[in-house]
Length: 279
Image (tube, rainbow, N blue to C red; front, side):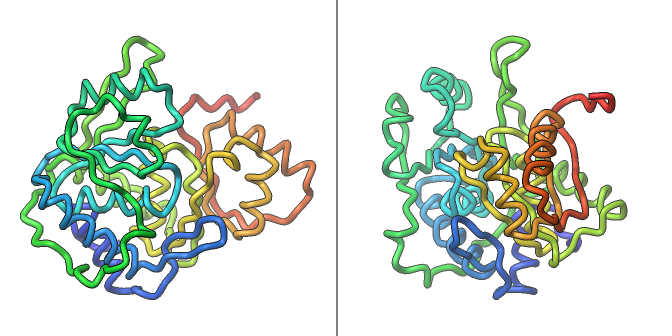
């Protein structure tokens, strides 16, 4: 996916190469690489006006949607980092995350404002349907460094109070540059964004698809909870790269046995849990 050492710069290079290619698919709608880039640029300008700069944390409270992906890119393009605030999480946990991370700004879909009711900082509305004009979608001047903060994702809290883990751009870029020879991902691949964007496995799904010019199918929360519906989606969309925890994949295999439909899968990548081969 080229040599840029900052995530959004690598994506911008891909968008410049294939602006008309489909980047995102969600519930029958599509968004091209060019449109995703322009929309993220326009939102990044709004974040800059709100004072976001290098290493400033931007909270993102959004359901799985085009808006969510645009918001993550916009936070990086503005020079900041993103902090997922998945609205499906308990209210008390969201409040703790906001208090601990203290984002400068929160991007929030209008109907989710009650999920961050205790946040006293600046809230920027995240509503693509209201964004009629994206003409001002030229990229912002990027003066950042590979060592700048890219995102903060909190641990599950299974071993104590959840802790925010800070990850830099260069660390994510290194993940893909070192694994690229093993997989050979490319523009003909279709990935799913199955996991919550508050779970670090989502980083592999999101950036793995779009840095290589592939297509990312955003999976709704409801479909992600149903192995049968998810299996049907994977089949219908011709998914070639599937990323799963072992426990989720065991449910997927059961659904596959029931459906008996041909799959287009080339790679199944496990993470998030120990892989028990005897299970």
